Length: 149
Image (tube, rainbow, N blue to C red; front, side, top):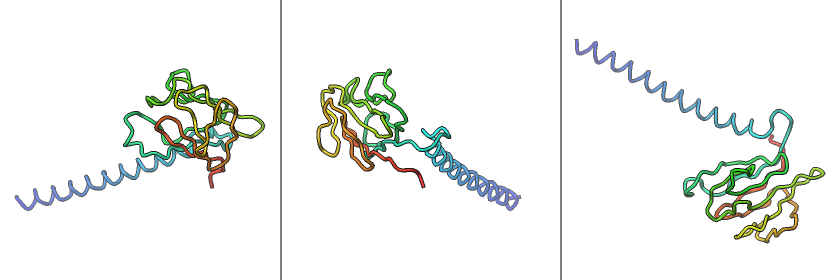
């Protein structure tokens, strides 16, 4: 009798391990799939900003990437296209502008300002290039404007 119970427990343990491995692989697949799907909508490539900070060190929710497929504002207000509840980001902090295939950022008079590669963006449009570092509030983003390979 103890041999049968031992054998059954051994098989149950193996099944649990396989289910755990399957769950981890499924989560990795869903994460990779959602990154590839975000923002393109099947219509092609869109630039995006990628968070450089470690999200776990922040006291608020922030996504890893935000796609810039149209003119879009970023700030704490729910009316913005990109909403980030960083206490150092203004309610209407900055605006991304898409014009003639080029991407620009414009500070919206925020309290703490917007920096592009360490320089103040100000209220004038600042052209963004692939690899530019954007700083707002406590956050640093990398502007990525190249097709996924």
